Image 1 (cartoon, rainbow, N blue to C red):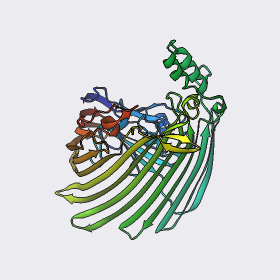
Image 2 (cartoon, rainbow, N blue to C red):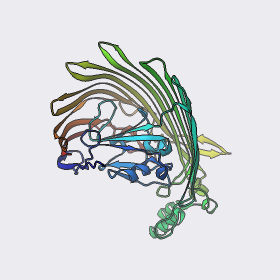
Image 3 (cartoon, rainbow, N blue to C red):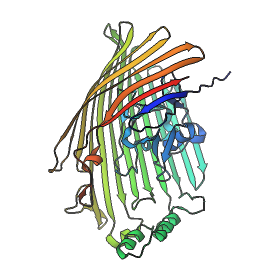
Image 4 (cartoon, rainbow, N blue to C red):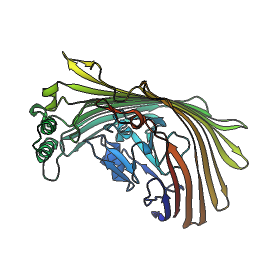
Length: 485
């Protein structure tokens, strides 16, 4: 018999967003959901955000192009959502969200995605309104593999392979894919290029400067038959079972995208590259004060330029490239113990993100930095150090889980006209579930979380003018969820 679980929201007070809660009870946590089998055939496309939208009623997306769509969960988006890929934090480099974090992993490499809606995670930095944990496929024992392909609308083509080999101690996985697609059409049969032409025509107002700038957004004829995007990816994993209690995991993911068209902006991306490195060491039963010990390290790097090469603007001012890079390193240690009949986890978390961007012009086939041009994101470092503790216990029909996190964050920039910012924040949550019987469980949760403003919000410069506000405070979310399953 198939079990159907329906959660009914009795009360939700979300001070930050003030909207009703779409609660889905899976796995015994209020407002949580796990989307499994992401890599099955019908969602085997480049875009994980699109796959999640198809699989979960809780997810909406902002559609930017053929790929690289952005997530919305219960009205929250951008930095208000925390996204990790195999516990690695990755940020997009584009301040206009052309390359959101979720776009740097492909759906065919994903085993499952865990969605925790609300401030109910203290292990990661900046979990304000929702936590999205992406888990990619693990290596398997034995020898095997698969070849797969996919054909879709608007010239979409995909091919790929996944191979695995392993025994009891060592396991290895290699996944490769290549995909591309043409410009999609709207309900009136207009492709991206025609939509831009119609937009320009409808917004002409007779003002010479305005009309020239608007007309410069149109695509050049020689690019109108090109692909809207192409993307290649490679993922490798090596697992080593050192002994019965200790395992080492190594992972690497590379994404290489080319000529991604973004018709709703004046520029496109000539390429979008990212690399994710992960190292995880886990061991258990070390003694009385360590039931489990997990050490993890990651490094992620994103290189994202924007250019008007494919537009009429390039004929007027030459090919200009706005190149941005985001580099993040992080480390975490977690120690689990059993204390006074409860499962206690103590942890330390560290991360450093560098975000930098500037303007370049093509001269003789080589891009050179434009003299005296202001940086858009001026070499911003966000350094976070944190301590967290989580506890879970079962008392009769009650199940409790709580967490506490303290963050010390420093944000500095190469700009000499602003000061380094320091943020010290404390957040946490308490969840309490009461299982009345096998058919009815009452769910509740209360939490407080915060995130610091990012480099764009603080220090962004546009056309030489400071747009960011360097005096912003941390953003706060206080949330209460009550439901019944």
